[in-house]
Picture 1 (tube, helix red, strand yellow):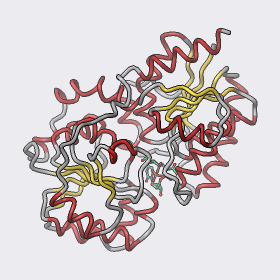
Picture 2 (spheres, helix red, strand yellow; picture 1 turned 180 degrees about the horizontal axis):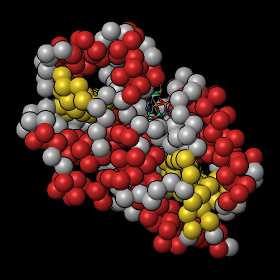
Picture 3 (cartoon, protein in one colour; picture 1 turned 120 degrees about the vertical axis):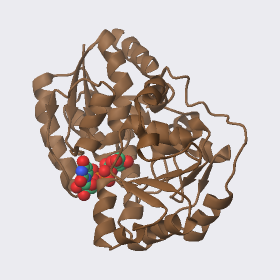
Picture 4 (cartoon, helix red, strand yellow; picture 1 turned 45 degrees about the vertical axis):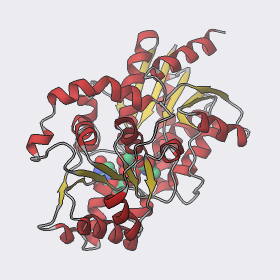
Length: 357
Ligand code: UD1
């Protein structure tokens, strides 16, 4: 049996790391990289860091407007699927690469498994929400991280075979943490002491493509006076410059750095006083490390983190962000484990069972 995994953007490499390892214990795997992310720090370093097998092919699609990017990916992937004739295509998360992989497979009537299925923000202005809904509709196997995701799929009357398997990013985190702590020098390199700094990331279109939102976020970081490490995503770097906001960080408490490796990010997250982010993965990682998370969005798919009080939705509202930086101090019980770290194995067991019959 041949499984073809489609990846393209940074969080997908983190998800592929464990699953690829599990898949290869039982099946042949072919990895197709769409090329959505192409900078060394956004792609290659993750394959090296996480010891993921080199992609068998990279479509080199690069940047483009959503519809066009997806179209290019679908046509490239169709050719590969026709040549490779996989029995199952696996897609991850909610990016344009996810939807493109699912669309190409659906067109060729190849079975599709969606990892991190059923997540919903209920905000249809987000490209990620559109990608999730469309992908789930055409997937045959829906692997869910949480019970909430299962309920979402049930409410939408999604047809495929639905399985609660736990969260694959938590698998990767658990497997990587020890080595990360041994190998990373990031605390020394940035001259940081545990729990004396915060870490921030911003890349969602809702924040980067809206100048007022990005300005509020930037100003709240600077005005907080807290030491904030801010690894800047390429999308955000571009717009900060074009809005002239990059200058606001000069000689301030905010240290702007390039995107970091997985190893370095894990170590920074674990040792941070608080995390400010609009990323889904970092909200989960903050929860795992019991680091208070200030989410720079008005809603989240990872609702358990908010329900348990470890995550606060501050949006791009300057006063809410500043208030949370100063006073948000959760200590409640955590009720969601996001699986036991066996999510990859659970998925492969489901695939084995479904395909043996
Ligand atoms: C994508 C995903 C998002 C995910 C994020 C993780 C979609 C719609 N969005 O957002 O869900 O959370 O990845 O990082 O798929 N760029 C570079 N170098 C790169 C990659 C991108 O300079 O290596 C620039 C592009 O030129 C483009 C911008 O960043 O202008 C946005 O890239 P894109 O891949 O469209 O979306 P992301 O913001 O990365």
